Length: 291
Image 1 (cartoon, rainbow, N blue to C red):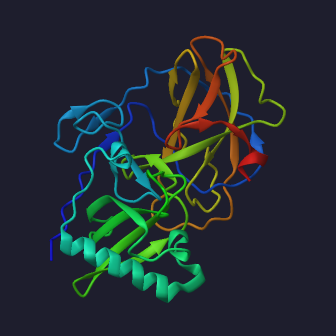
Image 2 (cartoon, one colour; image 1 turned 135 degrees about the vertical axis):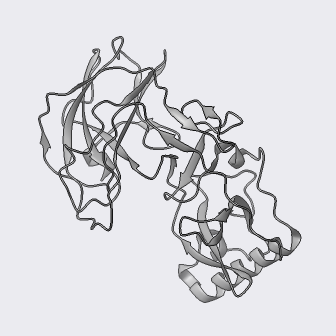
């Protein structure tokens, strides 16, 4: 059987102070005096080959992303550029693994397998190599037979592991939930509009910030980056806010929100404010819309 390759992972370090990460949650927004200055949107980073690179870039100029915080892979893989090649033996074994999970999970099987056979569904390997626990693994997208492309939002993300020399589906559950890859000491924080304040147009913008990963509902104030990275274009403004990753285990009762102010180089005007905690970045929503 073909031996798994080591996954290429770029280690990224922000040039600004980093703060915490946590699960989607709700809570009161406390006032904050911090005003975040606009940065150039660059970080220092080490590419897969060890060269110094730009912000969130692999050695060939492509951003690295993750699904559910797993191993990273180039975003262009989803578009069929530089796909992960698997041998015929591995490919046949993946189909057998999909057939097994379809039979074993029944109505709880991955969505595309509910109405199609393992031989008919379309799949794309996003990464193959060592997972975060050091074990051989594969991450793939599973799509319905009638699709002509792959989508991180639409298609189901699965992870496979090695068991007695064969691939076996170990986890699945919806889309990729793609985010830009960060180093393990850092995690993403999400943004929301304060209640009744989603029509701001000036150069000073007030937002709510909450850690995304589980944090046992800790106070995010000491862990959030003092300043975000901000990218401004003629059409939109993207805000990337991070936090210090939780060390050890944590529960997920819902993370508090805190108020922050960002200073733009020019008025927001009719431009769209985007939250960079997702890939691709999405328009900032209200807490109610985030659920």
